[in-house]
Length: 116
Length: 306
Image (cartoon, rainbow over all chains, first blue to last red; front, side):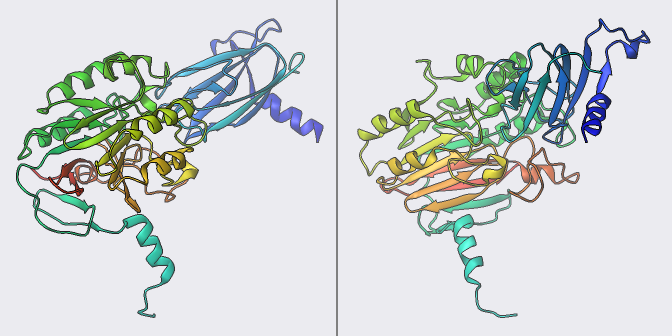
C-alpha cells in the first residue's frame, strides 16, 4: 500500500527542464502540475516534497483563483489559459480554495526531504 | 394519473414561483411581470421606475457568448428606448469578468451612456477577485468609500449591499454590514417601500453551488416589519422569484450568458445555448413603483426581438 501511494505521488511529479530537453538534475527543483477545470482542482490533493514548485493551469472560461485558506498565497484572478506557480518550502498541510467559487477546494501536502 | 394536485408539487411551486407573481407575454418578449399583489391592473403612466441590469461580464470570451459587449449594448439600447426614463439604474454585479482595469473602464463608459438619473453598482465576486474590491469601489462605489450604503429614489428606500468579499461558502454580509443595516432601517417608516440590492442571492436558491448568502436570515428579520420589501439579486444568470410574507426576492437575467438551472448539472458554468436562443436568455428588468400604494411591479424583458 505504501508503495502504491509513493508511485502515484511520483507519477504526478515532473522534473523541471524535461520539456526543454535538459537532463534531470538533483539540484533542479521539481514541479508538480495541477489543472483547474470543470470548477475543480485536478487532482484536489497532491503530496509533494519541500522545495517543490506547484503550477496550476486554469482551463475554464470562468475565472478562478488559487487562494490559501490561511492567506499565505493567492494567485488572484486567473483567466482561461493562465498559470500560477508557488514554491512550497516548508512541510505542512496547505488547504486552498477558489475565492470566487469557495466550493472549489484543494490541498497541498508538503513532506520533508526530496522526492524519490 | 390522479388529477389531484400533488401537495409537494404545489408547495414547490409556491416556493419557487411565489404567490402574486403574474407572468405575461408581449411582443417585445417580456418573460415575467410580478406584482406585489395579484393585481393585473395596468400601471399608471408616469409612475416612477428604475432598472436593474446584471452580470455584464465584460472581458468574457467563450462559446457561451462571443460578444458580451454587443449584448450589453443591446441591453443599454433597450433601457434608452423605455417609454419613461428610469430614475436610476442599478447594476447588480459582475460588471467585469476578471476585474481588469480595461474591463472596468469599458463598463464605466457604457454605463455612462444610459439615459437615467443616476447609475449605481454593487460588486460581484468577479469584480473583487484581485484586490477585494479596491479598484471596483474606487470606480463604482459610493463617494464615501463605504462598501455599503442606502439612498432614496423612485419612491423607494434602497440598500446597496456587498456580499462577495471573503466568502467561504455562499455570499457573506458580515457583522459590520448587518449592524449598519439595522441602524439604517431603524429610521425608515415601515410604510416606505424598501428595495435591497446585492449580487449573490439573499435567500437559499441552491446552497450546494453557493447560491445563497450565509447570514441572510438576520437581514430578513430586519426587513419583515416593512410593508413592502423587494430584494433584487444577480449572480445566477436567470430569473427566479420567491415570496416570503412581505418580502419578495427576484434574481435577474444576465446580459452576457445564462447559467444552468439550480442542480440541473454538477456545477454552475457559462451555459452554451443553441444559436439564436441566446438573446432570449438575457434580459433587463424594469421596476415600477405604483404611486400612493406599496405596490412594486417587476417586469423582466429579454433581449430577443428587435
